Length: 189
Ligand SMILES: [Zn+2]
Image 1 (tube, rainbow, N blue to C red):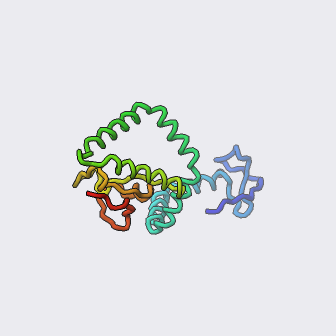
Image 2 (cartoon, rainbow, N blue to C red):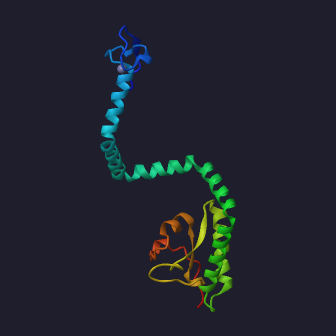
Image 3 (cartoon, rainbow, N blue to C red):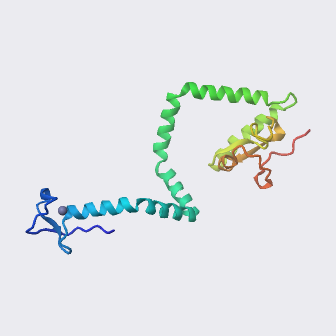
């Protein structure tokens, strides 16, 4: 509903809205207060319908939704970074625990025959790629360390260096997708 702006003072003051001293819309002679009330009633009555229509539209336009999300991230980047850093500093113990857990998990998932040199090389490569491309790369476990079906090992043959966005999309799903392989050179076995 478009917003009507033109209002005039007419002779007759609306009984319900005496505080408005007879402000009415020039075109319809409708009391400004009464009009606002009827609009509010209309909104309340059609709220659910409008919301449904709205969510249907977004569901049918996934690309628009993705764009909206992307714009949100761009607009809120600074605020988000600030929030995350504040959260991290106020939850230091939690993060330390998480890091320790992760480290001990990695240790337990490392077989005796794993080659430390090649594992380290993968981490170095991810750092170098990040610098070279300006995008974040990370070391991924091809078969995830933790998943419902299988548990992978922390060893060179289960590592690959992938772009972070690609990796995060994968999550803990065990996806064997050759397009996602950015594996290091063949490892000697
Ligand atoms: Zn009124």
